[in-house]
Length: 313
Ligand code: 9Z3
Image (tube, rainbow, N blue to C red; front, top):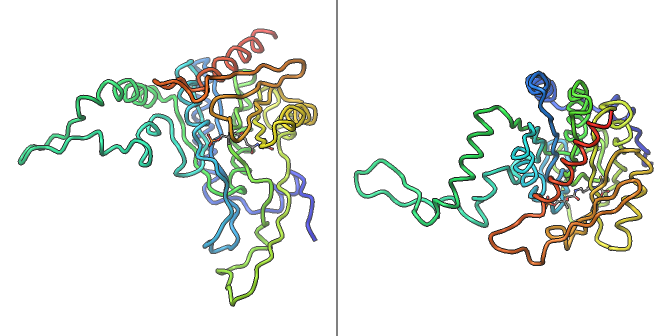
């Protein structure tokens, strides 16, 4: 029988992931430092979550998300003066280094092979102009301690981290923002139902029973970080569903804004759904070169709303 998990049952019955306490401590220290300097802090969640099918995991379910939305948005939040807690799926796209990811623009293609006996590696001249501003922003974020990274892999790790990170951000009050761009699985197999070892095939078909992942946004809004500005994402593939589902989410959880996007057009069209308003942001498709990323416009629009909300007390 499948259970309908409440957030409370989930957090009391499932075992905490091993690195949770350590990550939580790092977040507390980061928040205390940024808060003392009066800086706004945004939690950006990014990438997909896995659903393991075995305790000694050989196989798992996953989804399409590469973490591009989250990684790009994190860069624009840094540029806008925010400190960023970047909570992302391990090995998904990462702020700054994403520009030279192994698949699209391999880092080694930028580097010249040194002459015999030379011990310096140079960036080839035609790449310097593109690389410099990215390298500069990356080092500046590091030097100023503005970017904290927190990794997850499974949906269970994600949910435990989300709770602890949100609670650790509560002291920021209205200066905290949650920007929940991770593509979180709606279904999972609870640990007590997992096979200990690799599921054997023995030429048999395999039937999986997945249970619904608890909806935790209500708990985040009502109790974990009640004063934070909360932005969630709604992903659909059928455009007729997009706005109704985003509106339903706002009504159910009472947060500030839902960013609606369709899988197929997500890189150049999104809609900001607020209680009494919809605002579309559209780029020409396909996006122009040099790339103007839609995340630049999303972050500008959200940062403006966040600031207005801070100022409205
Ligand atoms: C999003 O909708 C993100 O924009 C994408 C970004 C995952 C589409 P990429 O990582 O893609 O750049 O490749 N994230 C939220 C998706 C989600 O799972 N939302 C849930 C839902 O729609 C719950 S809030 O029901």
